[in-house]
Image (cartoon, rainbow, N blue to C red; front, side, top):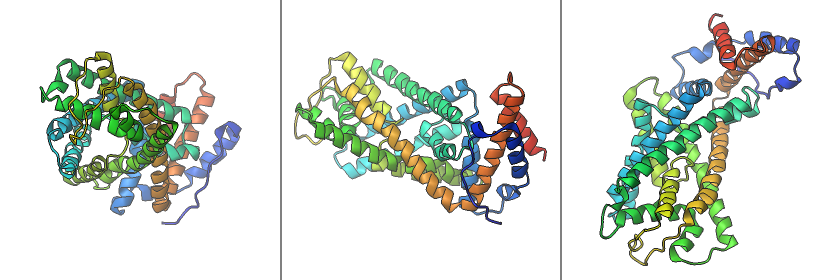
Length: 373
């Protein structure tokens, strides 16, 4: 396959209708057939189909985006609750981490077979925004609806579980609620969390170090999360192989304890509900060394010092791994970008010529024109 030099495209705001038509005509002359071959290598196949799946997913209506995120949030609630109940009494950290990885990996299988979506998976596509093959408004709107669904889904699950006294298991020792508060809350706040648990004053250095650690961990997190779908797609439809790829990648994420801006809402919602409850009795720290101090401020500190840096870190991680995978699949990536740019320009031109038309109809027209060629 002939390699086509990659480049950044021009902003459509600076292009006239005639310039857009000329660029469309030029892009239509490109041979895209290599993208549709079934004989390409597994890694190329996975990259191509992940690109298309996420690109098409951005165009789903807001309700489907919201519900997809909500379902994934509920599945996370089930998985993390299973992790808590199965590991709260395990003193060996290696065994606890292995079990955590195995159980949490089930989330992606539930999403695959029952539906759902992570905003962190959408982020895989973020580098294409810088190349102007899609509107930032479309990308950010899709991410916002999915993320809102993720937050609501986890919130609904944790709230119902809390009302059902689900965190009271292990009484009278209160090991489960201690596990949630410490393991899913304070532990993810690093230095700040250690100070909160010990009842000590928090310094500016503690805050800065916590933000830095969360940010760096979140970058590593999205290296794996963004590759989960790509790994599964590379199996060319083999369901068992896809399950194995999903399980391996998600196990690595869970065992590593990397910061995920979606999954971490399990801890955030738990801390919020504990703060509202106020009547919390904790067991000794998980290592039995000291009595944990409950601090209601942990809830808002968690959102400020964990969730927000994790969002930025996940975005940067997706950008980095997306660039690496794009360069590795450079020939196919060039064609994918050109094909996406062609659809984008066709949509822009249609909307200019039909001001009252919506973007969904314009995208349908562009896709119909491509498939008919």
